[in-house]
Amino acid sequence: MHAPLPGPNNGEKTLLVNELSVGFGGVIALDNVSMAAAPGEIVGVIGPNGAGKTTLFNVICGFVRAHSGDITYDGTSLLEHHHPHDLTGLGIARTLQGVGLCAGLSVLENVMIGAQSALHSDIGSAFLGLWRSNREERRVARLARDLLEELGVAQHAHRFPATLPYPIQKRAALARALMAQPGLLLLDEPASGLSNDEMEELGTLIRGLRSRMGVLLVEHHMDLVMSVCDRLVVLNFGQVIAQGTPEAVRSNPEVATAYLGDEVHQVSASPGMPDA
Ligand SMILES: Nc1ncnc2c1ncn2[C@@H]1O[C@H](COP(=O)(O)OP(=O)(O)O)[C@@H](O)[C@H]1O
Ligand SMILES: [Mg+2]
Image (tube, rainbow, N blue to C red):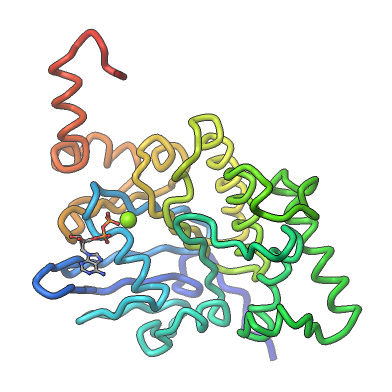
């Protein structure tokens, strides 16, 4: 029997981070961090360099171990399933800072791997072409093409990643993550290396995903998170210093001091050239 479909915000398919702490030697990278990301919302994790954003991302992915606290997704503790290869099976997909496509495979094949890892939790089998049947391979190829189409890069399906501009490669990597049809998508610095126009297009693409999944966006570009996110979590020195809507966070003086302190200082020091 199928369970009833989850309603919005009833706790299902929600990522809950509860009093999480992580240290590296003497450095406390995350200090008692609590936050949540529910289906249908885009949550941004922001903060200055060294604030702990990537560490939070890495604990959720299973790359880094927590010292204390807990993370659950859809009611399952991620700390018990604490390996990156468990994630897809739990319904979580991720893209990493940078691109990480396989050089020897076409864009289409790279994207198809996203489904392979969801089906078999074994990326290696994808390289061997071990689809369960030709029919499955065709179905997966169609889904991959549809996603490349949606992300505006279908015309590059048969190219090798290294022959394509960086923003196109990043879209292919996003398509690969989406192949698993995740309930939660984790994006680490998706805007790195993109121009302002490309960042704006990326923002539109991310907004378009929201009806299908929750998105946790780790990003230091304020413009992108402010325009894309429904809610922001602000980290500074490993602690959550603010949470709320972009508007609330923007007007929070503690955030301004922590995150924009240098920028604000520079702007006021050169009033004639605010964007220099
Ligand atoms: N593998 C590691 N070993 C030691 N220190 C680390 C490691 N990863 C991160 N840190 C430290 O943890 C803190 C948080 O880093 P990070 O999560 O990368 O911040 P952010 O992504 O917000 O820039 C920093 O002080 C950083 O130097
Ligand atoms: Mg980082």
